[in-house]
Image (cartoon, rainbow over all chains, first blue to last red; front, side, top):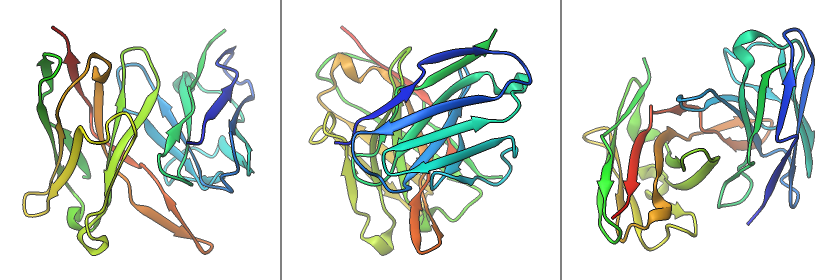
Length: 107
Length: 127
């Protein structure tokens, strides 16, 4: 199975900050990488697929990049509604695996 | 509006069984691959398994922890997805989400995405 790691596991940031989260699979997944946002008590929300492709309706302050074994999710200017936990997921090989999550909270 | 609504979960004793359903509306269910994802209390997301559509022979795939105990099925006439869970263990305690998991085709690649999620239903396995 492909193991996914994320760093940091949590971070504190202020509104307006630029935030970057890293996801590293244990082997190459080319660009088969999705990102999700989850708020407490809610289902995850799909943000990005194919490492860098923004899902329709997702604000442009979110962006993704990477290939192979290193990926990043960037929020260019953190907004109050962005405080949440972010998960990466590989869909290159079954079983599809998620990263452990990165919690973004208010500084 | 695209919507997925899971049935109520519940409390089950270890070794017991439970079947969850997920009612779909607002899209062509029969064309769509579907998946189940779970989340143990205070933990991250775990893919449980998926079922493809009839065109793709309704092929199923499962995560190792549930393989042989859980069965995913679908009834396209009822727009409903199912997760039959047998031989339940305490470690199966989680919120279970059904998700639409179609492929997006772009630049020569099919990207499997989990783009619509149900609200989730809690399953507790405890004596």
